[in-house]
Image 1 (cartoon, rainbow, N blue to C red):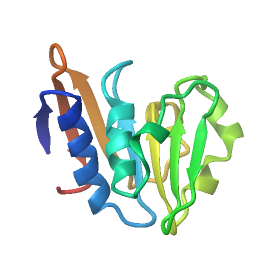
Image 2 (cartoon, rainbow, N blue to C red):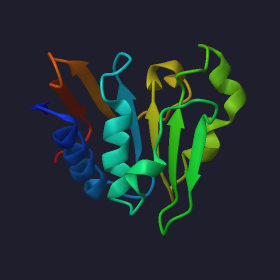
Image 3 (cartoon, one colour):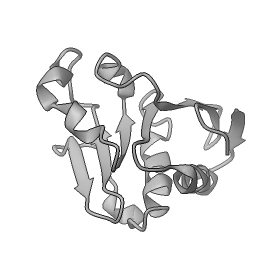
Image 4 (cartoon, rainbow, N blue to C red):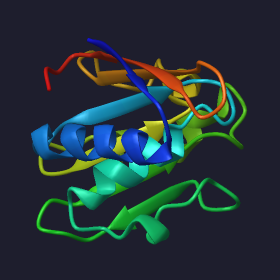
Length: 139
């Protein structure tokens, strides 16, 4: 599925729609260059789980943020991780059948991620516009 987002609000709304479709055990992999909207999509997904958007931030020093909900929610941001360092993080602990995990910069952990993730590719399309490609789930 391909679509366009005209602004940040629409990107968050896409994330909310996606979040409402997720079930325990789902892993969402986000791909795109710096500033493409990965954290914005994550904010939308998290809001579908009752997590406030302001609580979701890009990685500064926190690589894995855990949110204790009815369905545990993990926000994993690999921006500051070098390729090859992901094995040391124990990511498999966050890929459980009772939780949902969202991974920004997922390409850095492709070898660690189970075979059936939901993939979201984001790309700048001018100003605040984004092209979004969703694979592995129908909205």
